[in-house]
Image 1 (cartoon, rainbow, N blue to C red):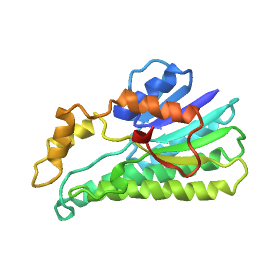
Image 2 (image 1 turned 180 degrees about the vertical axis):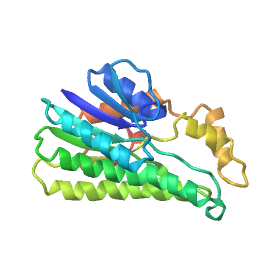
Image 3 (image 1 turned 120 degrees about the horizontal axis):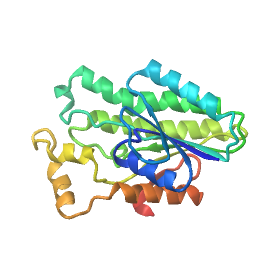
Length: 241
């Protein structure tokens, strides 16, 4: 049995991933506030901003899973938020906190639980983090988002380093999906230029039909995953595939 757990599996890239892996006979589990309504997907309703509740639910889920006969198990840290787009001095503390909690605190917690609970499994084990080119390129107005994605990449490298020294360790990778047609892109394009100087670039990408579809991203991730093109500690841009 191949199992994949996807956070934020009801929208955008997460939804496309649940659909793709479910169509390939994976046992797919989505952790999100809303249901994706995709067939053959187990949806667990949870507010990922609630640390204690999410921790308890994820612990219970993993305890149930590890007693099954497993060929592979994957955690996809996909859920995230851009937050308000504005220079740092114009952001409210609550908005900053929400973004950091969803974008990096929760992936750290879930990855910690995942590596601990699966440590005695000898099957293929991996964590796939959905990162962003914003991890490497600073965008005015995206200080929190860029910082959190940079943190995701360092988390990936650190977990990979730790797990490489363990027998049957967990493989950990980051993936940059490119510029994708999601609700986040709608938010970006509707931002005032005074808050986001690069807004016209994203408007032009939409006009010129240069945005990736979520299905393309999901299909590419599935391909490079199942063809074992992902090496421990990799930070991969799917535009290179």
